[in-house]
Image (tube, rainbow, N blue to C red):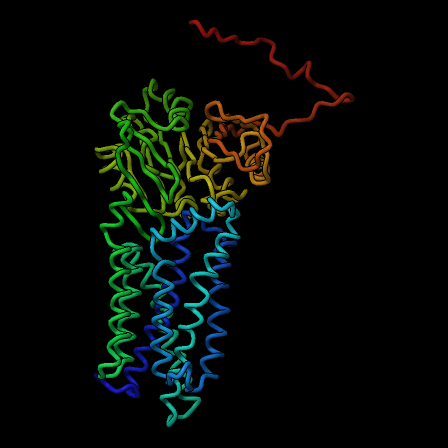
Length: 485
């Protein structure tokens, strides 16, 4: 083993530390999405829980002096190894799927349900101390460069630390999470920390215990983030966007869960979720009697159940997660999606910006409910982009997860935002879930907004006691519908 003052070895240590810190930050953001969402508020708390401890770690590491603690002499080398061991021990539950699920379930069971409070507690317990300890690495390692010029070696250390951070930010997300999965990306972090301990240890018998302990932690991480554990939890894909679970229930229904949300249902009889069947009845069934083919855009593919039985019209499914199609075909639909359907794995706004295509039907189903509300898909600009892709006479139907009786700010503001772009809409609460007598602000239902695009519609006027044009406006003949015909 090379000696600790070898420059190459030291720079490798710095690179690994930079990688582990940034990768752990991104993994924490990704692993907590099913529980607290991916909004800028929760992400900012995690970033803050990394940056401040990192700064304090830099400061303390620069102040550290070898000393005795409880009769044991703590050298720079021992301090580095101890920091890595403690950080790994805390990150093991903090980054592993089953521990995280148990943690947030326990918080909810204890009555701590506000997601910002939950993510703050998560960061305080699992992120702050490990980052603080790992942040001490660069200043501690600088002790072994005492003969170098201060400005020159400081620049080199910062360079290699930044290189490690760059790799942690880019390589872990674009390569590892995308192709190996989030759980294996977590495992790699612990393998790298084990490498740190090995690199920092001497060739002495007394130095082997920390190495063995770190190897034990790494093996535990490999198990808790293994394919076996993922399969036990019915996880079929676990990439940088979603944790996708799928399987068959005892009832015979085949279901897909995306980030813990019940996303899709299908069975041999062709039954789907009630809100999907409602949307098909409104928007798709009338097209089946037409002699021409129509173009349908589905934003939020789920398990591709919307329109699955329609072999006539042309469908384009848009979703950011490329793994959805394979999981849906294998575990939910049990067959390919059909030749008249294509899947484009791309962010919704990017797709709409890049195409001039217009559609007869647009089904907007990109909202998983709970805390999984994409902030960029509820803005007026996004709805304006959707409107520009409707043909004249085209139908837009949505599936929003919101209060059926406007009993929270999110529901009221989304309604106002949506109507600012689509002023003449119908609003249907799917099923018997109005809860009109409830004062709860958290009860949510599937709510469909239905809009038919007409280029010639005016803005409308308001009837008042002073000016009332009802006599001129009302239809001269009313067409009645006989439900028994």
